[in-house]
Length: 132
Image 1 (tube, rainbow, N blue to C red):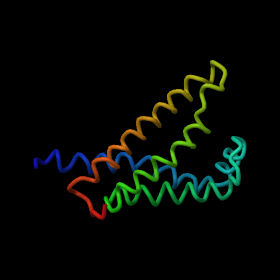
Image 2 (spheres, one colour):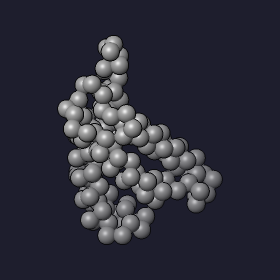
Image 3 (tube, rainbow, N blue to C red):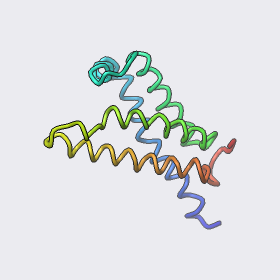
């Protein structure tokens, strides 16, 4: 195995997780703001959903970075992103002026979901604490 084959999965896991770490941490500091946004989008039991979201984002991303149960962590994030993407980036319901940005965010989420599926399918790589 060459150095790139060993290091690329680690860097990929770190890059994928960085989004969720940043987002989860931000939701703690901006709890009320995020709760209001989720409520405005019609999320049922938004306060519980927000707590679950923070736990999923922070917990799964830490597991993803260290590579312990990385397949499961990536699968949890992938499944969690399905309703998040549909509810918060539903560009097909918006007027033309708001549509483009939400379409970009929707497809960005699909790309992230693709990266998560690669971890699910291929595992965490050599530089990980494996328990998959």
